[in-house]
Length: 242
Image 1 (cartoon, rainbow, N blue to C red):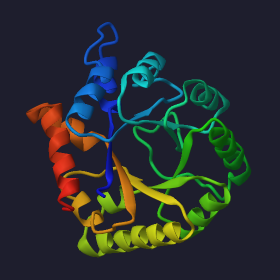
Image 2 (image 1 turned 30 degrees about the vertical axis):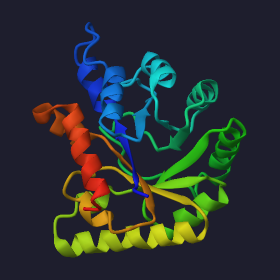
Image 3 (image 1 turned 180 degrees about the horizontal axis):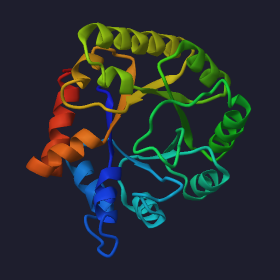
């Protein structure tokens, strides 16, 4: 079995929102193209300030996508209410700050153990797969397991931003150790943030990673070759294991 590819289409919506008076480019159509090109999942982040994905997008995506819908969301009552109403295939709980351009790090599950456990339990009762977006840290892995989450998504930002080979090696080993520890505890292991057609290759050596959620690099590539081709190239990379 190959790892799954979740295509994050937030940046399509970002481009649309730059001109709020026009409906294009439509992230719903982008999801269709990504699925046709081989994506296993569509990932969207509905932010509190609605800077890109809108409620309308989420509702139509739930009705139209043929693969899986993965909703990235902050652990707030508003977002939980939306998730429980729409029932996406999965919900990935992420930290969120208004001033950040993109998600800057993983959840502090240890600090917010009780609140996250309550949300995970409510998602499970609704039949929604839960995942916690965390840094590659053994304590956070253990806390995620204690919270009852089905999965963790390892934040790969520091690995992707490494400025030297020793730094990259250090971050790779942190990811590897966290993946191994998570699997021993029975967690499903996903990865995402900053991944592209080059730095993904090394992570594909880690067989326990079941899913990659990738957005910016695919959408950036699509500017030049089109979205279907950009998605196909990433699918082929994953299936070739680098």
